[in-house]
Length: 311
Ligand code: NAD
Ligand code: UDP
Image (cartoon, rainbow, N blue to C red; front, side, top):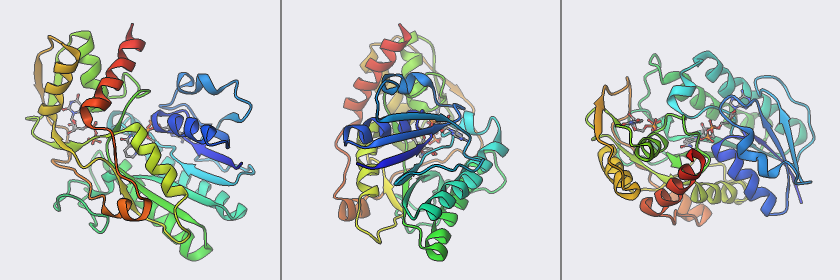
C-alpha cells in the first residue's frame, strides 16, 4: 500500500483517479483549492479511512510525506483557465515546481497531467509525441498552453538535474461523468443544452475536429504510465484516435438524447485548434494501453450522469 498525493483530486479527472487508487488498495491524499473542482466529486470518499482531503493551493509550497505524486491541479476548460490567466500560468509553473520539489526531497516518482494543447493549432496531423507544436505565445490560450509546456520543461530538468523519476502524460480531450455542467467544454455543453432543449452552440462552422477519450480509458492509461518501467518518462499521448467534427458530435448528442434542440452558430474563439488526433503507438508499445470505449458508448454513460444531476 502506497500513500499517494493527487493534486487537483476534486476535479473531473482527479476524482476518478482517487477512486481508482483507493480501489487498488492505496491511501490517497487529495489536494485541491476547489477553483474548478467540487466536494460533490469526492463526497462519496469522505468517509473512506484511506482518503484524506486537504484544501491547498499548489502555488504555495507543501510539506507532506507521500510515496508518489500525480500532478493534475490546473483548470482545463478554456473559459475557466482564461478567467484568471495569470493564476493559470502560476498554477502550471509554480505548482509544478512545488510538486517537483516535494518529489525531489522525498525521492519519489511524479506524474504530470500535460495536454495535447502543447501541440497548439497543429500543422502535423495526427500528432505524434515528436511533434513540437504550433502555439501562439501571445493569445488567450497561451496561459494554459505555455504554462503546460514550461511544466514539461521543468519535469525534464528536474529529471536530468536532480534524478527525479518523472512520467509525462499528454492528455487529449477527455469526457465523462463528473464534468462540471457549466464547465464550458464541448461535450458537457452539448449534452446539457440537449437535455434542457436549449440551442446547441457550435463555434465557427463546426468543421474543426477533436478526438474524445472516455474517462475510464484515460484513468487506465494514467495508472499504467505511473507504473510503467523505470526509465520510461514519456511524454506519451493518451487519447482516443477516433476523430469527429463538432457538427458530428452535436448530431450524435441530439440523437442519443432524443432532443429537439436546434444548432446555433457562434464565432470561433481565437486560436481554437482546427484539428486534433493523437498517434498512440508509443502508449500501445510501452503501456500496452489503448482506449476501449467508443464515443457513442461513452456519451450514453455521460448523458445518464447529466440527466441525473440536472433533475
Ligand atoms: P478540472 O478543472 O475538473 O480539475 C482541475 C482541478 O485542479 C480542480 O479540482 C481544481 O479545483 C484544481 N486546481 C486548479 N488550480 C489549483 C491550484 N492552484 N491548487 C490546487 N488545486 C487547483 O479539470 P480536469 O479535466 O480534471 O483536468 C485535470 C488535469 O488534466 C489538468 O491538469 C488538465 O490540464 C489536464 N488535462 C485534462 C484534459 C481533459 O480533457 N479533461 C485534457 C488535457 C489535459
Ligand atoms: N465548442 C463548440 N461549442 C461549445 C464549446 C466548444 O463548438 O459550446 C468547440 C470549440 O470551439 C472547440 C471544440 O468544441 O473547437 C472543443 O472545445 P473544448 O473547449 O471542449 O476543448 P479544447 O478546445 O480545449 O480542445
